[in-house]
Length: 291
Picture 1 (cartoon, rainbow, N blue to C red):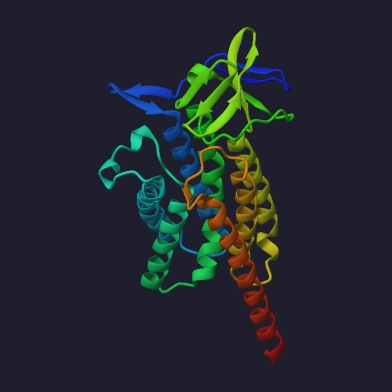
Picture 2: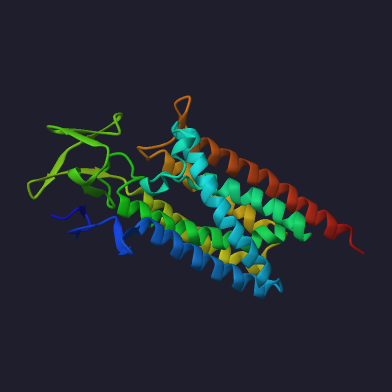
């Protein structure tokens, strides 16, 4: 059996290296490759949407440059704050530690400042960039696959993923049991005489969930009823999906024993629902009084 095995799908991956290639003696990791690919494809999708709606592509190019830099900083700071690491570890990014909600919050702050400076409609702007954000998230999660991280607790469902025990960082095997990061227990399962832990492939769940959400938003973009509708759909859809997926995870960032991402996901979905109702009623009222 390989490094990763999907027993119910009979799919085995013999060897999975975190390093994609080396450039001038520096290892380039798959995590970074997937983030870069997602960012490029996302920007292309945003450009296409801007062109379709008669907006300046150059404006979104300027925003993308700023948002990517600020987003990475936000993702790192969010991880450090809730993981309890020192700020002195900020630049140890190659050792891992990015949180998507930190990137989203930082990107939102950047968008607010950007639209005020450019004097453009905030809701039209977010409706345009939201598909690019989703594209980046779809690809970015596959970096977790190569890193063997952000997986879930034990499962034996159809998509169950078995990870070779000696390839998982932070996993301590003791006979028929294994302890991950000192607090999550897994039964040790043997395939072909090799020790594995069997987990929810939460990276795959989120990638597929986001892909479905992107398809729905893409289909609805020409038929939206009010500015901000696509942004509301994203926040509700992503919030619900992430809330469910975080309940399966084994490595959540926690505050007072509660996964931070579940709290943020609930607030995101609930807040977006309220905002969507308000925006829809405002648009309907404006249409009713228009002579």
